[in-house]
Length: 122
Image (cartoon, rainbow, N blue to C red; front, side, top):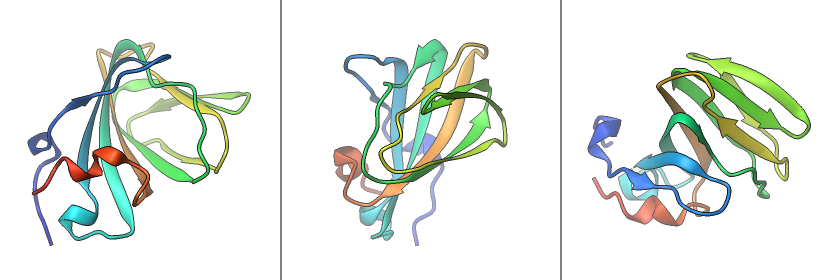
């Protein structure tokens, strides 16, 4: 077992086409004794957004702080602290912070899909 605060993990800027004002912290995964999943904490600045994308695996999102919206397929959902979102495989999705000074969310994905999972040893 590894115990730490998520702020102890390195904040990795998320860069690329279609992303603005996003940082990621890989807080748990194979290097911390969880061989089957990776937990990431994303911070999305005000007026920021993740890329509109899809991938062949499902994942879960929990909003820890702030308000915004999540686009899933053709649907738009308002989210706030405590909101839980399940994204099916191959479904286009995006998180947008159009309201809060900062939107913080937890995202859980299968192990092996995030190359940054090897950057944050405990």
